[in-house]
Length: 248
Image (tube, rainbow, N blue to C red):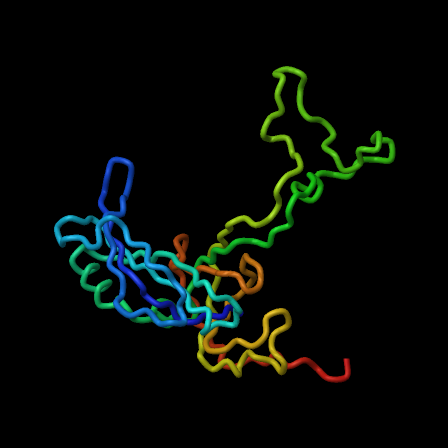
């Protein structure tokens, strides 16, 4: 279950093609930004772009923490790519400036999507938990959770393929081909009595996805159109119940 409040279109950013890729040449911000969205306008050198001077244009959107079940003040700011030719894209993005985009405007139940998020962090971990190295025997010279061999004597350096201790978790990961089962604004269908354990009550709208998604609770989850498949399986889920059974 993913809490899916609407996104606010706060700016439009223009790009120019260069030998090293796209380069931002200007942006246009919305005139009125709600007070609930505590965001700073970081304008580039060019405040706008002429119609003939840009090659690509994208939407700059931000989340509204007051509409979700996350207790935070600073919103998440990121870009959305828009398809079509240059003239139609410019007309569309300028018409959406200062408005909101909901999940129903982009996705529909039964569609396959890709889900990206930052995984749960575990900090500094050893090679056993990090790479699944087998535990040493009782005669392993007190090195039961170490790597058995660090490699040959020559060349005199350790290869990057040798499993060693280091940072584990807090990685950006993407899972492909997740099917949307349900999208609704009636949160009574999924909110159990007392709220979801570890999260609370979903306030407004939600997306029900089949299978697991990366990321920790109350962390940003980004959803996009599936790039590996174009399948569509109609979903007929209309209501679900999360009430726990009494007497157990």
